[in-house]
Length: 453
Ligand code: NAP
Image (cartoon, rainbow, N blue to C red; front, side):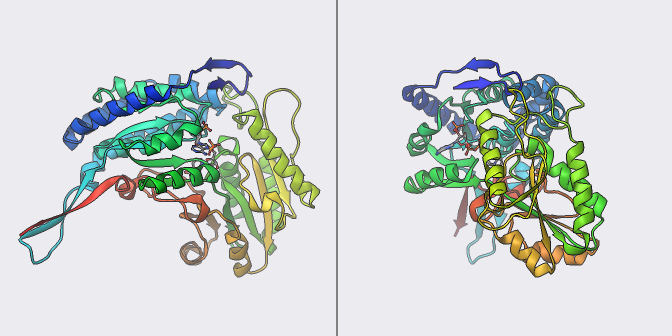
């Protein structure tokens, strides 16, 4: 398992995969740790979680440096990612007890209530694109609920995986409550089958989700899947076009476009199509790619060379099938896997850019005449993660958000962001289950009914 700096091309480290015997031993230790961890009070858990929050903030420069070197995120965004991890630790340290408190229910019995109990060791299979945030939004609620966890991180960010394990250890959590497994994706099935693993959560692509869901299904274990997205944004006739274009471009270019909830398809009212397009293309072309450590850089390289090849193929195939390239759409000179901000129009069903997730700084513009047509285009996808609506008619925006758009979250006059206070997740092939908020911490607990006669 190699970590390669996408900007310099240098191998940072060659990691040896753990053997199956090592993996089994670690899981046994994590399970053992669970049995005492589950008995700790929320107050005790919160002390460790707050320590973890503080460690993240103290070490944010160093940790952001690992992110930058392993997957090429610009440093400014990497620091923001670490700060967000600290905030989710604080959020669950403060709220877990309230989210999981006993809930009385009136019956004929003298007492009846719901008690939320931890279930054991949860496996987290995670992606490289937010190599700290994805882990912390699992880790913080899982540990605060009294579960233990093992992490199988993406193979190109093992440095991040080991740094997270060390951080948890440094924060005073009991030994083995959270461990990293350096293993490839082929080993995931046998980990899921291990009787000491009680549930699995995966954030990643739809094919990986299918594979993990089928292994979890066969083993009758609970799973949460956070998968890909092709988020549509409706720009209505009455939208503030400048603001809409600015926020849409920000979302499309965040993390060099490698975000599940990046705005990807822009469905624009006929009357404002030209003005939105002009402003959108102008802002996309103003973004500069370069050294991710340089604070002036807006977009770093893509995380791996193969990911750029895949993205360019999607653009090229769409172009050959009749799509128009308004901006970008070429491989820049040099060995660094940069991809320029790219804008496509005249994209129709059958083209990769119409159906597939574009995991890079590539935007697709569509034109609509009626709101029904806009909704039809927006929902004409296998994905259902996030969506946006820009309009000055808030009531209509809410109506389209609630009743029209098929997505797990819809933002009106803003772009979709994850927030510890709000549930996060998708529908359709974007997955199932929710992370974050009260709903997220309740995904991996035993909802236990207690009745006293
Ligand atoms: P990926 O290739 O699916 O990998 C994600 C994780 O799954 C990695 O740890 C990977 O391990 C593992 N994996 C891959 N194939 C597997 C299989 N067949 N069985 C078990 N595990 C498997 O995804 P990625 O390229 O890292 O991340 C990009 C994708 O994640 C995009 O589609 C993006 O939209 C999605 N994503 C979704 C969310 C969300 O919240 N919905 C958030 C972020 C990203 P290896 O690295 O060893 O292959």
